[in-house]
Image (cartoon, rainbow, N blue to C red; front, side):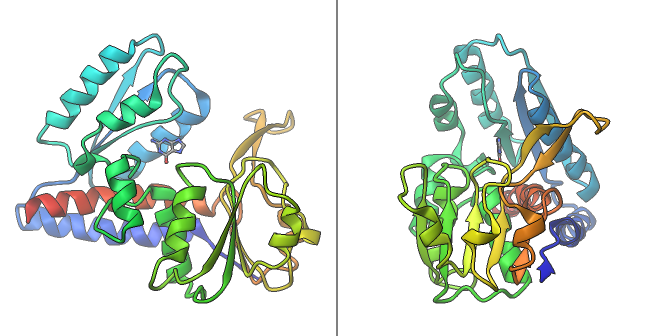
Length: 292
Ligand code: GUN
């Protein structure tokens, strides 16, 4: 069994990005600039956005954090989005999800300029991705594909079972894994809460990508020997003995499943750090596209 070390690999990718940024600076070209919009004080979102901003500093990007009250109206948030769309200094920005319940998430995501949508959540980017056209690929699926490529894990003709049909992970990764090319060409089964006899499908899988958000959901008796496991789950589980009062748990019973797997991502330190690295990559791509 080999660990798919997302922490280490994201470090390599960040180093590459830093190199590209330094080269741009030497040539007098624009420094990539990413902004993050955070509405409210959700603990997990604060952690993620903080990590994104810190990573910008690591690679030499300019970054801007825009914090807004959770009482903000949809109208005022839409005005802010318009402002960001018009801000020529920005190469990309993200609106951290989830948003407060009184705000229509779909309306907000639709207002983002697709050319600055480095999260790849706008329907224009999603549609372009599905049609093999140049687009921004959502950071988490992009990170999974990059990880499979760099670890040279064969995917062609393999049966990939995706658990979860979210717009951010399950749906897009199911499309990417079936596309032509490296870290693609898989036969994909997309499973969800209404899937009957899930274990009969996961037992047939060469690759399992789980993005469910249920700690320890995938057990050893649900997988075959030699399976490749990508665990996208990151759930906070209360734990008094931990200084933070919680621990982060993946969807996979790592202890037992790792005994049968050929490759497996840990949680934390697997897919999570890759997501941030690929958000930076999308921002660099956006900056480079504009310079052309
Ligand atoms: N919330 C959970 N994951 C993400 C993500 O990748 N991007 C944004 N903007 N919000 C999220």
